[in-house]
Length: 393
Image 1 (cartoon, rainbow, N blue to C red):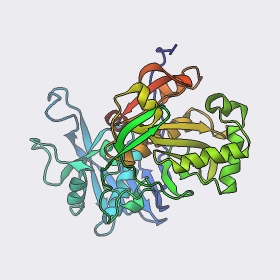
Image 2: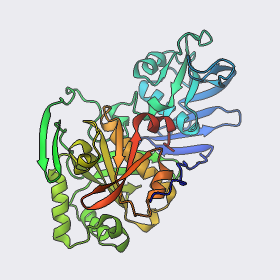
Image 3: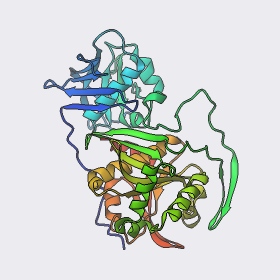
Image 4: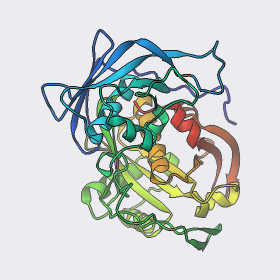
């Protein structure tokens, strides 16, 4: 029986006034919140900021236009983007906005003046990072409304700056085609799109700085030929704690066979979880249309996905890190295909982790249901809700 008294409760994180981190391409960046409310952004270890967001005295509406009545509408002070020397290139504009959203993590929209950086206007509008609200005469020719949800969906990021490290999110090659193929197996009988090839084992798939713990989280396609990966994976699966949930305890040959089957199966991919390069856990992401669970729940779309996770190292357990890993796994799924509407999960219903999953993510507990090997809880996380919550700190 699910404890429905447990509710989604995102952790509140206090971001330090000066936040230092690295972009996905390893470029160092610093965001310093000043006493006057301005935010100075420094890149590449420079002594002077490349840009500063300066709080102006005027305010602009940020409540949804065309929905919220004027007497209820919220207004926020306008921030002006001021380059320190000449024009900013688009990569530096994106990095500066990244720093801004980490310092203003709980705000859905931010009014921004580009009077001092007019060259950034076409870039922000055309990529969807910002827009000019319709029928709002208060927004002048260089005022825009920044959208947090657009930013965390990867809008405006070059391949070098994307959190999704593989597959490369934008290349000179055409978009991967949608071609119907058929999967037939135990408990699976599905027509679904042909899936793109997986990256080579050992390839970094995702990387993002997590402000809440001041470390970088990465996901790397597991490489069974790498002793560091394989021996650590075996140790985790053979531990009493992990075996309660995964039930994959066995000798080395058992684990090699499991990972070899995962590597050959186009619908699923395993990856190692690392904090600042230290192995912490193992996860899997899958296309669920051709997964056995889809047969028993129904209604899943061609591009919907699913995830599984184990945290193997004791020192990397705890709510903050668990929530960050879960958020990042879902983030990776939504980023790798914009046609993914939902990311689902089906953990065993009797596991003590169920209340933690309810609290950590804005996902719905759809129902409990039976699979041949377990009774499971069916979690559904929807794209719109996920990005609107903005849990990327």
